Image 1 (cartoon, rainbow, N blue to C red):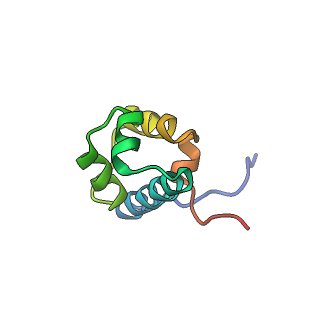
Image 2 (image 1 turned 90 degrees about the vertical axis):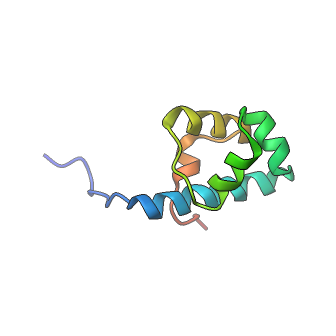
Length: 84
C-alpha cells in the first residue's frame, strides 16, 4: 500500500538555511523590523538575527512562536521552493 511519494528529508544545514530565508521573507512581507518581530514572537533580537542567518535551528516550541509572530504556519516556515 502506497501513501504517495517519499520525500527526501533536508539536511540540518539545508533546513537552517530554508527556515532562515522563510522567516526573513515573511517578516519583510509584513514590513516589520527584526526587533518588532522579536517582540511579537517573544524572542531576543539577537536570536532572530541568528535564525534569519541560518546559524541556528530552533526547538519546535520556538518554531511555533515564530510562526505565530509572523501569522503563518510552521509548514510555511519549512517550505522548500516557493510555488508559482
